[in-house]
Image (cartoon, rainbow, N blue to C red):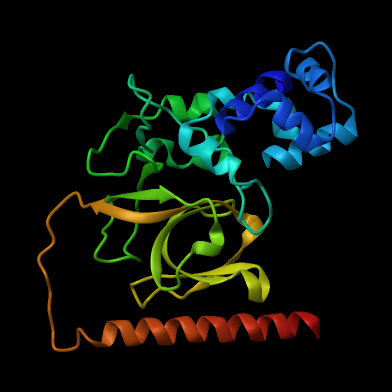
Amino acid sequence: MHLKENIKLLRKRLKRSQEDVAGSLGITRSAYNSYENGVAEPGITVLMKLSDFYQVNIDKLIRVDLSTLAESQLSQLEKGYDIDITGTRLRVLATTVNDENEENVEMVPVKAKAGYTAGYADPSFIKILPAFNMPFLSPNKKYRSFPISGDSMPPVIDGAYVTGEYLQDWNHVKNGRPYIVVTKEDGIVFKILYNRIEEDGSFLLCSTNSRYEPYAVKVQDILEIWKFTHYINPKFEEPTATKDDDVGPTLRILQREIGMIKDKVKNIEDKI
């Protein structure tokens, strides 16, 4: 149990005295002091008040050593982000830091790609991934690089590595933008996303290659979403400009609309 250490840590980060917090909770200072010192354990009513006050769910207050979280995670946790099906709250992300306690950019090698869906939340799995730093990236955000296979997302080609920024709130996904999505079924995929959480609790995943049809993935089948930052191609690709270059965006729009229509027809057929 980590309750006493956690509430002490959170109180100090808020720069509040024990008396201030006790007053906000409607208990005595001596009672609150006994919880921080581990002399006594709060009942469920006080636990609920502590959870509401610090905006951290009871399970994490008790089970998770918050002092081991990165600053970016703690900051999000204090804003009230926590696990829920819509993706609007914090998923405690396994991560690594360098000797200066700065977030590393872990790289998922091709050999580790298949195991990522099982090990993404396991600190021991993340710890063995190659890690590096990119000075041009924000130190206050979390980044990770993933291998891309196939030809569905030109100009990103087979064998490229795509770096993404960890996205806490999935409602912030912007339609028509590229994201790395970790799904239970397909593992790591790089796609253009369209947010349909409010409509049917899903995302529509589209490719920049019009040969690939869009498909929907339910929120509950998604493990992580990373906002595209940059990519590294393994070789230089010569541009192949043609007079029909302006057709690409139009095809993708039509592709998306057809995909949405197909989904709606399927939903209707399933109800019949």
